[in-house]
Amino acid sequence: MPDDAPRYRDQPVSFVRRGGRMSEAQERAWAELSPFYRFDVPRDAASTSVHPDAVFDPAAEFGREAPLIVEIGSGQGHAIVNAAVNNPDTDFLAVEVYVGGLARTMLDADKAGARNLRVIEANAPEVLETLLPEGSASEVWIFFSDPWHKKRHHKRRMIKDGFGATVGRALRDGGVLRLATDWEDYALQMREVMDAAPEFERAFEGEWAGRFEGRAMTAFERKGIEKGRDIRDLTYRRVPRG
Image (cartoon, rainbow, N blue to C red; front, side, top):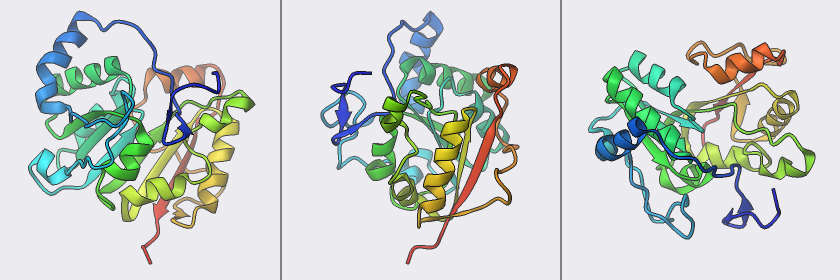
C-alpha cells in the first residue's frame, strides 16, 4: 500500500477498505436489522473513524449488566455469532470495517435468535482508545488479523508496540486478551509485543497457548491449516491497575 493511504490520528490503519456490492440478503439485513444490532458510531474526520466524544455504554445498549466480549475484526461473524448463541448470559460486540461482513453477522445472529450481540463499523484502535468505557470489556478477541506479511507493511499490523496500552485500557483488571494467527512471523511479533506490555501477563505456559476452545472453526482457519500453516494462539491477562 502507498504511504499516503488514509490515516487516523497520524497512524496508518491496519486495513484496506475493499469494494464490492452486498447481496440482496445482506442489503436487506443492513436495512432491517441495523436498528437493533448496529451501534451508529458518531464520526470524526474519516468514514470509519470515531468521534472522540462518542461513547458505547454496554449497559444502555444491551439493557443489562453482563460480561462484555469484544471481537476485533469479526469478518463474516461466524465466531462471534456462535459464541453469542452458546453464551446467552454474556454480551458480545463485533468490530469490523467491512459492511458486507457486518450485514452477514446481523443476518446470522437474527436467524439464530442471538439478541446479546451488537456490531460496530469502525477503526478498532479508536474503539479501544475512546469509544468503550475504560475497563468495560471482560475479554477482547483478535483472530487472524491481517498479517501484512511484506516487511515494508509491518507498520500496518494491529498488534505492534503500544498496543498493550490501547487494549489494556478497554479491558477490566483480570480481563483476557485472546490472539490467534496462522502467520508465524506475526505470531512471534505478537508474543514479543505483549510480553513487553506492562499492562499484561502471560496466561499460558510454554511457547504458545492451547487453541481457544470457544473459537468456532471457520473456513479461514481451516484454509490456513490445509495450506500447512500452524495456528498459534496467545492468551494474556490484564494485570491490576496501579
